[in-house]
Image (spheres, rainbow, N blue to C red):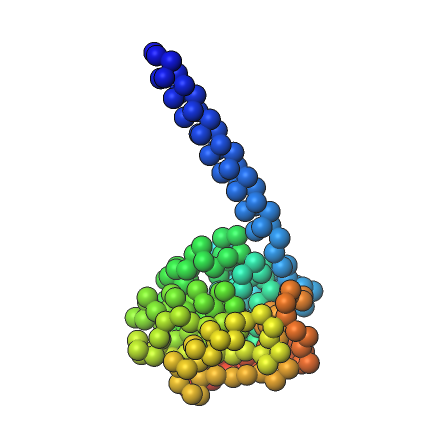
Length: 251
């Protein structure tokens, strides 16, 4: 081997060493990023505990992949995608309110608590509960956007999409899908311009602005950075959201 060949070999090894080091740093950074997520609060934990009881008014069943809330033989069901970096358990109180109104709600657990890593999570849920006749998908914030992407590509599997403090980049009405957009007037996180553009492509009666509601009020995971204070309780915000989604699904 000549001098030039040896020098070239050393350069390749150094480049590979740098690439490996950068990948390691990126992996550590990603691990730190996804480990810092919002956990479910005490209200959610209480609803989960009550729902696990044999005589529960609203049944809560949990697996490694999902949290099912309500009656699996209900006529209407919704697959719910959690917000970005929010524990799925945080949305059980909202799911319980939907279940009380006759909607079987299945919260999909996402890899790294980011719905972008499993946009098609609704597929396995729909297959697992064949007794449900009418399926919707929905979600909060990033989860809502990913649910809308799923609906746009699977219009034959679902009848509509529920967007809570979320927006769709697709024109869902062109696919014959129903939609319900719900957001809080005090939301300090959602991109208002994108939300308004989304609303402009949906039926006029598919929008509810909850007076005094904020971004985090759709779940039970505490305050969210950049959000504004709500002037309505989270329970009240979720009640209104559940009413609006149920009416859209069954109307």
